[in-house]
Amino acid sequence: MRKSILVFVLCISVLFSFSRATFAQSSTSNNSQSVQGAATLGVAYLMNIKGKNIKDGSVISGGRNAAQLTTVTYDPQVLGIVSRNAAILINTSSTPNGTPVVSQGTVYILVSTKNGVIKNGDLLASSTIPGIAVKAVKEGYVLGTALEDYSDTNANHTGLIAADINLHYFNSKPTFPGTLTDIFKIALLPTKDSPAAIFKYIVAAGVVLGSFVLAFLTFGRTAAKGIEALGRNPAASKIIHLGIIFNVMIIGFIILAGLTVAFLILRL
Image 1 (cartoon, rainbow, N blue to C red):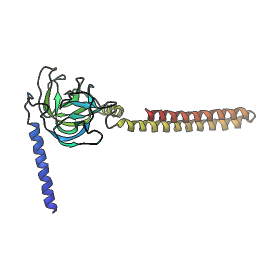
Image 2: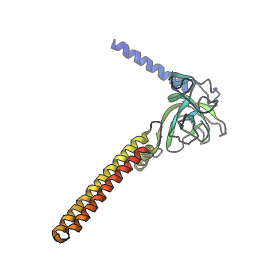
Image 3: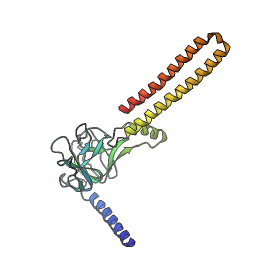
Image 4: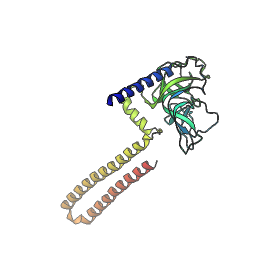
């Protein structure tokens, strides 16, 4: 029984790999395939998209009230690619009349040569052209990898090519300093997966911890100096006590300020 299951799984894997290869080779480099007829090997979710006549292959990003065609370069809030012929369509009661959007898998995508000729294997990114992808030429949030060429020299023209969609941050300079910079960039990007929330919790915890450490260090120094002053000049005990109380109030203000800043960070 186990051998039969293993053989079945291997057969499915081979068929899926063959389908992906066939999909990548199914259109020519001049991109003569129609937008509405492009098949997709991916799972699509229905989304409410702002605008009319949304074409298959359009790049969609998140908005305040609804999804929309992206107009931001290296947009970190990209949701996926429109595809009405997805292999699997997941429908929900909240979006019965939505448009299918694929966020991962092999899909046809609208592209332009605004950033240069696209070659098989090039990374793709969003652009200022509404819903159109271009060749990624620097670090940033990318859409995935082109599976075929697109060489129309007119940047105002758009075409449809196969692409392997994998939304992620790409670093063109994989050096140690660049990696540290990218960590902060990724943390500050309000992506669809919202890693910024995690970053806010980390920063808030650091602020609270820092305020407590600073308060205790200040309290320790104040207490030591107060005891030393009382030993040297007992007659001035009232003034010394007032000084200690004032410093304790400052310590309390430091802790309160740290908690307030942490609360404001979490509310951003």
